[in-house]
Length: 123
Image (tube, rainbow, N blue to C red):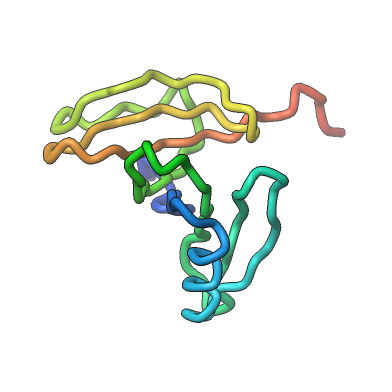
């Protein structure tokens, strides 16, 4: 049995210029706020399931992005598709993952994230 290259879309990054209005929009569509950071970002999840949304406010001067975030099991075993390009190889991020940034054939960004595993052995 072979394993899939990813586990699919785990979340979607939704950048916004107005945190409050964006969260109100998604809440009106049935999403619930799971947590909020102290810098105008946070995670929402729909009780019916599906990928979570991570809403993050960016400055007005920055174009907003809508970025799918796929999860994978291993940085060593993941092979990026030849139909796209690697914009950034796996880099450790402060939210507990190694992240690779890809570009699809139409130049859209796609994030592939592998959880950083604990080095503590389990018994």
